[in-house]
Image (cartoon, rainbow, N blue to C red):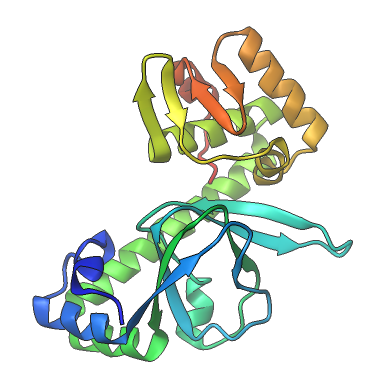
Length: 231
């Protein structure tokens, strides 16, 4: 069972009464995760809602050739489970993999649905969350259709800086450690193209470091380059 404080700390459930949060805590499970561990795989039953408590998780999809492509990076507080699948009881269309040591909270879909049915505010909160995710998907589609390669990479860096940036003397350090391949997958580009763009950004003093220790030096300029958000 998850602790009451774990449920209380999640923004998604801030609208719930203490009684409802206590009820969710009874049905929630805290699961420690290790780097590289799969939390669920494509085709597994979507019986649980998952929320990142500590650490980072990436959503990945297997290509026909067997390569795993990074689609999205999840931060603490993010709900993940391929939400539509969990609501409908379908199987997961992709995988979720831990990017490092951390903790995930699991809540069975039955318990979540019971709370939503009793609490209209919870239903509105979930709808708002899903609407935000839908807007993200629409922005992604626009970016892949309309934006140039450097704009896509800039959009990903802006998103990561805004969601996980830690202010340091050198600039905003992105706390999530990503490889060039991860960034390329998220931008829908080849690794070679992404590496060339990152090298150019370094020469223009927009960023410094590398994927595992990346600093954003000029966030406003990157924001101007990125007309559409990317995950």
